[in-house]
Structures are given as C-alpha cells and as structure tokens.
Length: 393
Image (cartoon, rainbow, N blue to C red; front, side, top):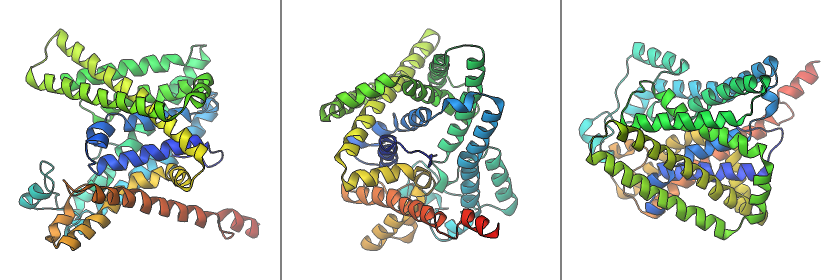
C-alpha cells in the first residue's frame, strides 16, 4: 500500500491520521469521533490518498499496465488472500482460546446483534480459503477490515485500464470522476432499494469516485499549493464542524428512510441525497486530514514522526489491529476478573471509558507499526536478499 522508492511526508502523515481514525472508529469512541463520524469518510479518504499516489506512467502502455497489475497482486491481492486464509485456518483454535465466541448466549452479552462464531470442518475451511483467493469469500472476524484491500485492488486496476483507453483516445481523465459520481448515485439508490447482489460491486460503486478524485487533485497541483498556503488550525476546525454537520444530515436521512417506504421518484431522491452526503463528506475529510497532516509535518515533533511511520505501516495495521485489540481486552478481563468468554468481544468490549478506548487505539496501531519497522529493518540487513545475490555472484 505504500511506495518506498519516493515518499511524500505529507501524504504519509495524512495516511497515518486516516489509519488512526480507522482504528479509533473500530474502538467505538464517543460521539465527537465515533463510528458514525469516522465511518462516513475514513475509507473514502484512503481511496483519495491512493488515487493521489496513482502515477500516469502506469497508464502509458500495455507493458506498464502489466507491471502495475503485478504490483497490485503483490501489494493488495496476496496480503488479502493470505491474511484471510491464515485467520480461517486459526478459526477453531481461536474458538478454543476464547478469542472467538461460539455460544449464542455469551455472544449476545459481549457483542449484541453480531452472533456467535462457528466451528469449521476441514472441507469448509478449505472451501473458505479457496473463496478468499477468488475474492468471493467472507472476511473472517480478525480480518474484518481486509475488504478494503479487495476494493482497492479492483478499483485501482479498473482505473488503470480505463485510464489507458481514455488517454489513448485523447479523452480527459476527468471522465473517471464523472463515472465515479454516477456509480456513487447507483450505490445510493441501492441503499434505498437494494439490487446489487455482489458486495464487492457495491464497494466499488461507493469508492470509485474517491480514487478518481484523489488522482484529479494530484493533476491539479494548484489545489495542493493553495492548501499549503491556507492551512491553519482554523481550516481543521471548520472542516471538522462541517463533517459533524454531515453526520447529522446523514442520520436524519436514514431516520426518514426508516419511517417511510421509498418508492418511485423518492428512491432516486434518497439515493442522490445519500450519494451527495458521501461525496461532500469525503471532500471535507480530505481538507481536514490534509490540513492536519501539513501542520504535523511542519511542526517536526516526535508525534509527527510517529504519525508518518503509522502512514507507512498501514498494511500491517489494517491486517492486524483486530487481533491486537485482544491484548487490551485480555488486560481488561484480567483487571476486572471477568469470565474468560469476554475475550471474544469483537472488535472491542463495548461501553468502555475513554482511557480504555485510547489503549485500544495504542495497541491497534502501535503493535502493527512496530512489526512494520522490524520487518523493514530485517529486509535492510547486510544478509538480505540483494546482498546475498551479490555474494553468490
């Protein structure tokens, strides 16, 4: 998910803020930074950052497209498939260790509405692993956030191929953004009157615009330069308050949908409204996080460096933060002497204090980032692959 050849510290910081917000959302923080707030934009934000990092050279020819697809297979497809396969293989062990909860009564206590985990036979395990490699399987409990890798893989490859044909025929790349907005409206209509039977297609419709928007923002560098000149605390505050307003509007629209059965013209109206809220929220989130990232980079403090490292280790955080949450859940169970089945709460124990929420965030980001740093250091050792090849030569 990251490019180690040439790093932009501001983009690393933005990605780091986004990943911390994602982990915070999964930690069920209070209202000002809760799931309703973060869930409205955090994945759109990741898509915009990914689109911003999309290079034109990947769309210049068939050979370049092939290299791009191979890099996406290595960087997105394989981490998704392998991580989910490992979690599927560990399913029964996790149940025995109470990391998963197989009892309906106990599951209702620690995670109402989610349901119990199921013991998997060997044929079912093999089936689910195969389905994961085919992108049509379910995401296991500990891999609950890995769907983003699947969506990003599909969106980035389609964007690259369609971009190649647009440029080859002399068309402007802004058509990608128009297509993305159209798909977003389709997603909004699907929320009112479901017709998409494949979850992956729904995710592509929801986030394609964000990837295209990120790419277009990079193409128009004047927007970036203006943002650098205008960035201050006030910009962060304005974007944050505007986003909270979008949360209230989204909640009001969902309540209206629950009160009445939308039919006919109202389906289109509600769908367009939902799409507009997502679109505006994503743009505001870009302004919020970009402004915060610029401030963090310019301060040069240790916290800013840590945020940038988090941005470089987003893949590890995405794959491991649910599992790392269990460290804090185990600590809470031990401190308050709760029954061991409470360890099966997913993703975290509900209704905890701010202090415990911050511990969840620290574990969900800190442990994977340490693993990321150690992995980088191991790869850079003198006995790494490159050095060994030289010595053998």
